Image (cartoon, rainbow, N blue to C red):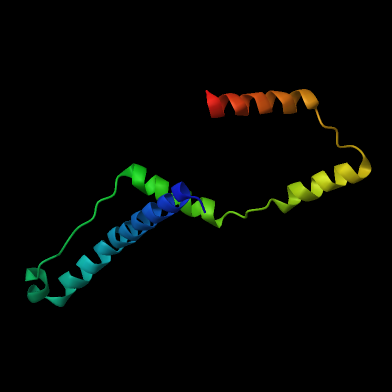
Amino acid sequence: MNVELTKYVQQSDSYQKALEKTENAPNAAANRALKGKEAAAAPQGDRVSLSNDARLRTQAFSTAMSAPDVRQERIDALKAQVDSGAYVVDSRKVAEKLLLEEAELFG
């Protein structure tokens, strides 16, 4: 894993833990209320509040990490095209994408 991805994974993990803590907080408050006056007088401790952006990033990261690395159906379809001779490489498109990629790298 490269450094940027590792940093993002660590950041996302902290968001996920904070999100879980926030989602479990209402249940903990309800349990304290049921235990009586002594529990209600106890300090509540730290609170965590996540922005919508942080929640979306956490959800997006979780979705991305659970997605398969290989789209096997796409690979099988391409192999079948190559085997049958139906796969044709459009050299113009390849050249265009190479030039665009190079421009992004050095632009």
